[in-house]
Length: 344
Image (cartoon, rainbow, N blue to C red):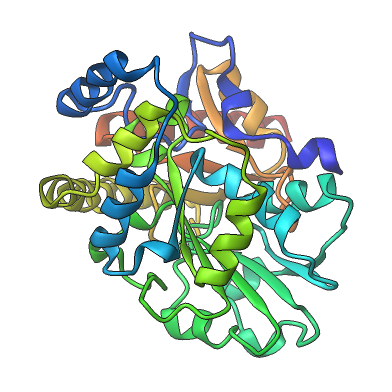
């Protein structure tokens, strides 16, 4: 199972320049010009070892929390490795389907977590009362990748319990209008919230992310972090994207994503499909077995679903793009499904 957990969207398009990329959730091919300039300006500092203190202060100010609640990381994924190393939970539990790296990190650390698998028939919604009360480390995404479901803040708050560490992956929270349902606040006892900057700002190759949470837990993660794991350019991106101007820009982006997502959902519904209700820069939909491969033959890369626990090969995740790209994908999807129906 581990090799399947290590399958991510970039594998779908690696070395395949002829494919329209709807498998990777990075919004843009390059960062905006002003952010690219910030990155270029760091080249004069590269002879010195990186210092993430400015980034930590900027992120703390952006979220209204003390600096000891913030840990800059080499992308959101590094945080999962730090959690697996630092938190000696006896009964870790993953809420699936979700991003597979948390489970992969725990397995690399020699621990096999329990799974709480949400079901399609309930819209992949989460009932906190159904989560095993013995779990002392619970990891959940919000909005969840790949389902796109945005769990209410109250649902996540109900998962907090004495002796339990709650980890919420908010990698796509800045793509949600108003960052609704985010758990970040000054009161995060027993909680770690993970953020990624790579998706919205087009800097996946730079690895920029951070953790906000319980100061004691943040300190434990920091003890496991490799020296200088956050590069100078990444730290500069963290500081630059925490400004009021950047937050205003990302708010406009979230509005555009919501419009484009609505268009994609309507287009899928027009050919008889039922996308999972959600709010994220991607859409999960059940299209039937074999469709993923046939779409590749038509020039479209979408994220296969069968590497996510709880899903099978009939599911695909489609990144939200502009209306014209979504329309072209749905036309190809309709043709593929029609040919499949005729063959049957």
